[in-house]
Amino acid sequence: MSPTIVVLEVETRFEEEERLDEFQKGVKHLCERGITKVPRKYILPALERPVLTKKDDATSFKLPVIDFDQLQGPNRVHALKSLSKACEEYGFFQLVNHGIACQSIVDMIEAGRKFFELSFEERSKYMSKDLRAPVRCSSLLAFFSDRAEASGGELL
Image 1 (cartoon, rainbow, N blue to C red):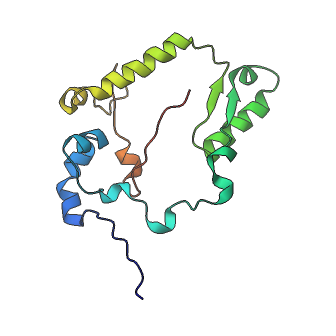
Image 2 (cartoon, rainbow, N blue to C red):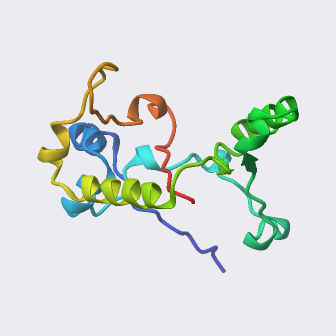
Image 3 (cartoon, helix red, strand yellow):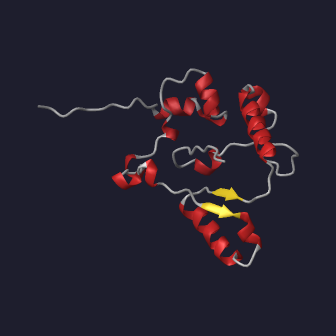
């Protein structure tokens, strides 16, 4: 009996190069264009993919929590070490006691949602690498050019 072979349809190098400009426009733009294949840029090599074990299930995951008050008080050194560890090991954390009003957070999330609902042409007006620009956005593409494209989300 022959083994089952799973074929993942990915783009060839030529197809990928043809879409380079499309990549610059982001995942949303690719989806809007009716993408039918997973671009190679978004696929981690098999040896770099995480291997899940039973201990990795969602119930055992503990999100690092950083208490902003602790960064201002006598436990500052410990809080900074916790912050450093969260950044190095997780890449994200939950910040509590930051003093930002809940409505401000809701408004920021809504503004982000509205921005990414804009057409690419409208969003591209804000694309800039100029750090002095009053309003700008850019892609993480430069940071991940040799690896699978990373994606992020939000957590409050």
